[in-house]
Length: 338
Image 1: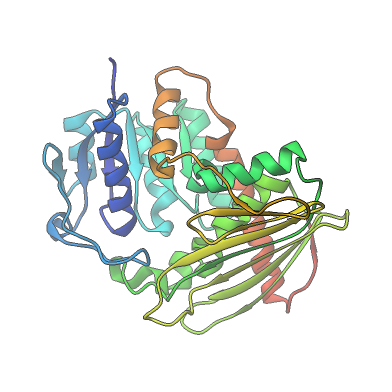
Image 2: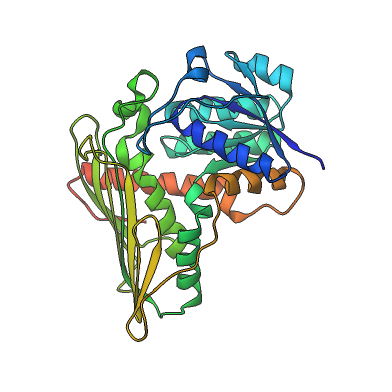
């Protein structure tokens, strides 16, 4: 079986989740092989990395070639795909560079910090003919895919209102404390809240108006409360926080009120509360969302149909909507048309 050769660029916190996904795919016999990892800090290769998902463990890098210079890795490994796990402010620079070196790119979210940067990334993809996918991994998460099926099918009627939240202590890890620098991370609204912004677009389409209020301490937009108005009586709200207590663990949830049921997820399971009938726990596929997004791109590289879920154009639209939320927050929650 032909396999897609992948190299990873950056080996901080999120890269450990990517590594686990590659190991899982390889064990399943999927057409993908992680052949190289590059990080400018060689000590990262032997270091456990703690994130808001909990304490890390030392990585198993057996069978993977390690580098501290990206161009040397590309020249030696000649990968089909480069998986970019660098800080957000480097996404445009290295995505464009890797595509111009002849590689398809999987870049972690956010696509970049502003729309102009996203446009340049898309232009580079069109110019080189290389695929560019952004890691909005919740588009592959079984709980959200179940919710999307309910929304699209109308099984319980229309959505009346919905609430999404994603909460974490301030990220204290990261190269040179980049998370804590708004100019390099974009704050919580751009780095973490963007997951829920993307899901709201994925589930419900484009809103008519948005507004957002925020607080700041270490970064701008550190705690954000966003409202999405669809002009048909449906109101969607999302809360993102980088200001939870240091001893708390990252958590997320959603609750969606349909005409005939309430659907709730605590981040581990999805429970359906029908207006009539018995409460039940939804049966979800057991899938690793990061493994699924990697596999989707690799299949596209091998010539299979490209899924809308990996469209860089979609990811750019999410960044543009985040910009509107930031503008609203900077103007005391001003309502902004979309």
